[in-house]
Image 1 (tube, rainbow, N blue to C red):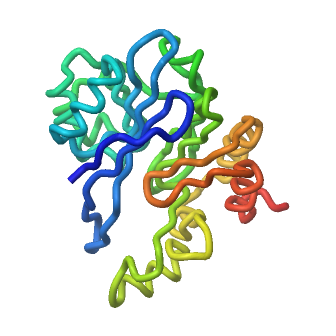
Image 2 (image 1 turned 135 degrees about the vertical axis):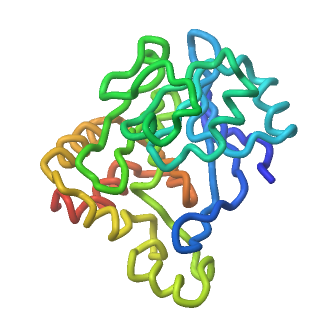
Image 3 (image 1 turned 90 degrees about the horizontal axis):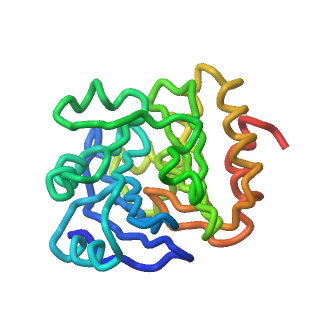
Length: 234
């Protein structure tokens, strides 16, 4: 069951959702973020299961205006949110329109934030990966970078049997959050990825929030540079 919202920083709240099963039976925890916009309303990043408890917490904060799946993998609960908040606008990351023809999208996510949230958030499209194209966001008020799947971290013991071995080799289980090896190998255009990362590193970040792993709450720029050392060097 999805938990209630917890304040993460100035104008941003998080909620953990249920465990979902991906390809080959790998189990993933889920996490979403709710961001209060200075112009009014709420920006929902990577929505998790919409329970009555979560809906009450969200409604207490304000009106849901935007539903944002940050890549083409994080869409499992999107239709429920659209039914629950039919007036909210849903924006599609690259590749999701083709997957979810049942969802009514009002626009595409690109390198430039929509005018409705440009005062509060910046964003970058990390292109050139065969697995998915991810939109990385930066929330200015809390100085938080929001990654979805490009950085992950699972505690030792989360996976069992042969999946535990695969997860260890993939760097999903490591000393600190890192980019899984499958995503590293998935980049067919590393020049585009480096350009996106340079934009991310230019943000005055203090924290990193990810969908699968505990947040990083200090020295975020150094952490991001370390996580992507394989791509950009030292």
